[in-house]
Length: 211
Image (cartoon, rainbow, N blue to C red; front, side):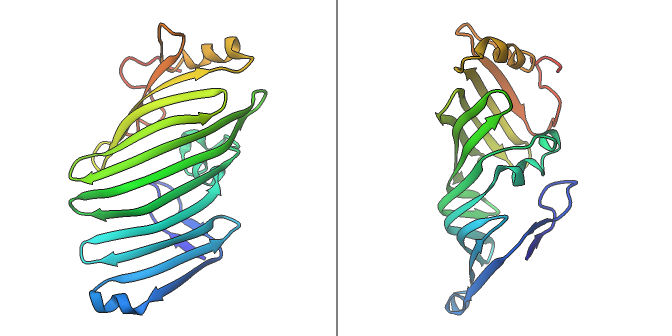
């Protein structure tokens, strides 16, 4: 079992059961600790190669799946939501160093659903870092009735800041869209624009309505 401390501010350690790891001793000659991690669940399934060197942490060939509930349970605002679906993380290579993050990651959420609305769809977030400067984030709907389109950035100081446009194309659109207007601004095409600021959890940013 792997126990990850300080996984999220103010949250208890995250425990992932049934983790196997193998250390490649030849990389030690290069001044790098290279470890292959894999797990067959039930918390997490997949495989990743993680290397720790002087001043950097590198992840390669990451293919991991986990229940969406595993993530939402760590977020205070979403803790009471029984989040369905599966989250998949894909990384070919990404390097975390003091100078910034270099590389890309793809995060897919499949099987999202909501009570009385059924399946909402599949969504993808692409993260790209080029070293110095923020990590760029693009969010979009791959398929489904809940249409999301967003762009923003992540920094170590300001966290996540992102603008997202929301639309719903299901049969109950007239009932669903008024809810989104409580947390954002309605656009001329009927969609709703919201601003996400991770430094203000549970509270609206400027221009948003209190809900």
